[in-house]
Amino acid sequence: MNRRRANPRFLTPALTLWLMFLNAVPVVAQRPPGEQGSRNVHVLSHIPLGGGAPLANRPDLSGLDAMGRRTADIELEQDLDRPFVYVSSRFPPTSFSIISIEDPEHAEVIYKWTVDNPMLHQGSGALDGKYFKSNGRYYYVQSFQFGGGGPDSDLGAIVFDVTGLPDPSQVREVGRLQGPLQRGGFHNIFMYKHSDGRNLLFATVGEPSAHVYDMDLFLAGDDDFGLVGRVPNPDGTRGYHDYYIAYHPDSGQDRFYGAGAGGYYVYDITNLDDAQMLTSMTNIAGVRYGHTITPTPDGRYAVTEVEHRTAPLSIFDLKPGLDGDVPTISRPIGAWTANWKNFSHNHEVRWPYVFVAALDDGMQVFNMMDPTNPYTVGYYDTWDGPDGTLANPNSMFQGAWGVDVRNEDGVIVVSSFITGLWILKMDGFEGWNGEDWGMPNISSVQDWDNGPVPRFRPVS
Image (cartoon, rainbow, N blue to C red):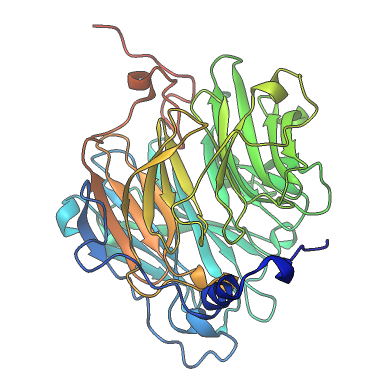
């Protein structure tokens, strides 16, 4: 692929000097002390979680990784009587922590698990975690990606029974998804309560498809770890990076939204044995590999990320593709970025708000009521050091990685590469139910007791 460069005949000496300056000098954080966040976003608690600690005994790690760029993804339980946050810590010694936010202004670590022989393990380690409920008990699934130079390179995830929290002595491992089919590990996972009642784990693997595991079969000791299906990536060259699964009330379908090789894909997985592609977003300028996709509660729009430096989050209207008016969707209808020099990472949609882990720009919130004209409504910068440089695309991986939202009361939790866990609150956001906005009450939050079919509240 040829890359067009600016024609020097059209660059004035002053502009040439300015471009050289941008590429040579770090982009320093622009917010002065005391103005790290917008006035409507407040810090309730902050726990560093060991970020920033040098790993001098690991010569295979360099730069920010050796300096403690460890905090990975985050998961927040939704029941107010289970106020627990799970945070993954990658690289050796790879681990995960459980934090109680029973008092959000005095959050505390109540449990920490570390892999055996931590300094022998290679690669990223613990990356993503999700919880689920089955037969009255609660479980936490921690995904891993270990390299081939050490142990557990075929370990996808470990499942822990966490029903007994907040008593840390009650946390226990119940099983591992580990074997030849899990070689290379699970980079991302997603737990979903299917309309047929099954508790399904979707996992990225080293093949052009997503693996689907029935976790009740897994807990029962199934020989195949509960592997019950695959969702293919039609590109065929590589698999998925990330995905989102949600119930679609208008059609009664369980829908899979996948980001990976070629772009983004939407499948009907109501019958998991016969997954049918409904539409795609491909042939998009600048997108050869989709990173993340999150639909709105009604399934009409999708917020996507591509993970290119300076690339914004893009918003697509799925209707033309779902209606069969176009063979694929190739152009977004809107875009948002906190800073054109940077790009964003994971995000959560709570219509009309999108909560974004925006790396160097911290936690950002934008409003997409008009998908063609989204705008920022709040932020908090979780990384108060110098921002990355345009000349080094990898240097900006030091701020917010993951974000989650508790629907009951609007508490926001953020994991930041170096600075750890942040508990935040935004003025005016006291919780979320889609029906309050004329939308289905559908988000990444699962109703483990009743399933995904929305149970509308009676009109008073």
